Length: 201
DNA sequence: TTATGGATTAGCT
DNA sequence: GCTAATCCATAAA
Image (cartoon, rainbow, N blue to C red):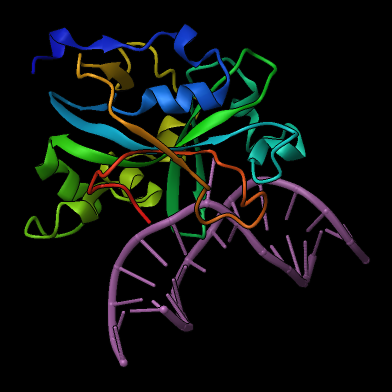
């Protein structure tokens, strides 16, 4: 698998309903460039968050300093801090002015695991699943913080954080209710790769 | 200015 | 399986 064969997802890809984007993101790869090294994970679990009609979405309260990226152009990183401990990575969807996004909940480690273990601060002998399963763990493994990455453009291979298609065929997608939220718990907006061991919950 | 609770995880039992 | 840790963005006052 050579970097040259990656096709970085374009802005158009994200300029659609988050439900379509979420489903299509499964099987794609998340790439972080750390100096000369690449950290790569295959996306196996995401959740869609909509606008005013989705009470669980940060964007449902209207545009604020915190969630402004969700209202901006598609294909940008929305990173927020939660529970005093953890960062979570999202990507904005829909055109400028229309809110919506996708939360990355889990990836399957593909490359750069050694660096990921270091960033997570756990022993390399630990179960691989503990590395990137869950949104907070995923963000930590890729060194993602709000200060460093919020608002970053994910559609350019020149960026140190982007999402690409490496030619792998699309996996079997399963749709379920979202996890860990208190509002709109019944909405089926969670997309997972059927049977994958790295999916959380 | 103060209070509240969350798109979570680690560490026990 | 259960609970504490932990802080920032909001809302209320």
